[in-house]
Every structure is written in C-alpha cells, then in structure tokens.
Length: 173
Image (cartoon, rainbow, N blue to C red; front, side, top):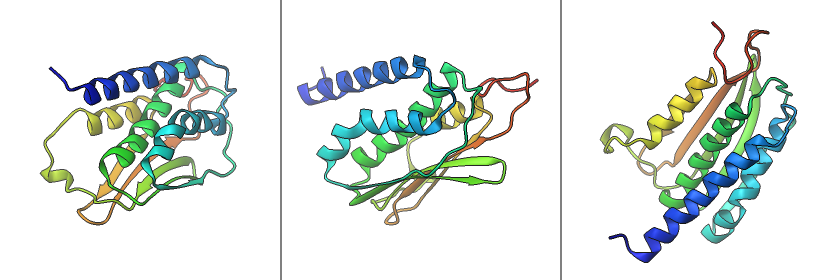
C-alpha cells in the first residue's frame, strides 16, 4: 500500500526508463554528446523542479562508432541514476555533470555539494552495485566518492579503445 506520491514517483521512474530505452535505439553514430544530451533532456524537469544550480561541463568528446544500443542504454542509465540520486537524496545546492578525456579513458562525472554519505555505513542496496555492474559490462568502472557533509561524486570511466572485433559494451575475449 504505497502512498500516492510514491506511486507517482515510481510511475515517473518507469516512464523515464522506457524513454531512455527508446532513446538508446536511435542512431547516435557513437556521438557521446548526443547520448549525454538525451539524458540531460530527459532529466530537465527534475533538474528544474529540484531548485539546484545545474552546471553542464560537457566538452568535445571523441566518437565511439562501435557503441551498441545496449551500451548506449547502460551509459544513459548510469548517468541518469547518478543524477537522480543527487537530485532526490543529496539536498544539494549545486550539481555538475562534466566530462574529460584522460589518456585512453573517457571520464563522465556527476557531482554534488550535498550532504554526502558514508558508503560503509549505508544499508546495501541494488543501486550502487547496479551502477558498477553496468560499467563493468561496458569494459569500464564506476567510482563513488562521498563522505558526510562533503557531497558525492560518481565517475564513470569508459575505455576509448576496444578490440576491433568487439563493439563497445561487448567485452573483448
């Protein structure tokens, strides 16, 4: 017996997930700017309704022409989940999404100046582990840095080079 606001939130989350799945099927030609832009567009209302100052620091990104629809969906889910967590739980005044290339890796960061948390002290759930599993499926990693009172940062690291035989999102044998 969930209260109406909880039912509404869950329906909104399901609709958001469906929209991300549909977006992942659109041709992107490996353009990560388009992929991240879709997440920003889908999260626009939540960002505006949260009252946070939102900073978009996404620069020029390399093309990853071998991105599969499954990989696109995984990237979108990781970033949208990190962003949603900042908006819902952090009580942040500022949230930033930024990117940078670091050698043979692409980093996508979602950070906030919110209340933070002690990862060791939270009840284990599926959320943070799901982020890590999705990143591993892409051949990448997710690093979560947080402590009480200092905000939270979620960093997705994706390899820029893959086996010529394996598209991004399909680990090379």
